[in-house]
Length: 103
Image 1 (cartoon, rainbow, N blue to C red):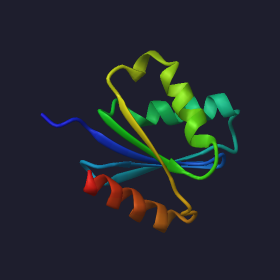
Image 2 (image 1 turned 180 degrees about the horizontal axis):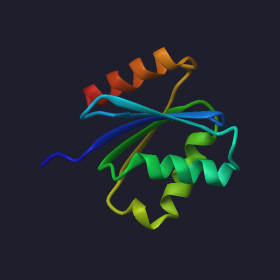
Image 3 (image 1 turned 90 degrees about the horizontal axis):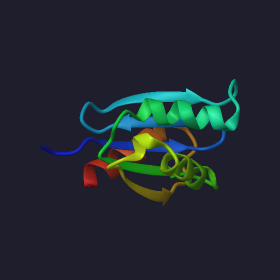
């Protein structure tokens, strides 16, 4: 049975999550949350992926990865990080879908 694959584009304002199996997307906005709460909401929205691709600009990717590594739910996750310069939702969704399909 193949592991679930999830793509995540994240910056300090929003997270766009794409689930490869269903090609559904989920948006999380940070404006109403503290950074640590924002990361926890994103991690919860990811479910239990076998493979997680994290993309986005800046340091947010590494900050989230660190938060994931400090949670008990991280067990068995394979995490890859790649940079991305996409900023609008349409380009983000296209980039995530392309990367997930290529895996």
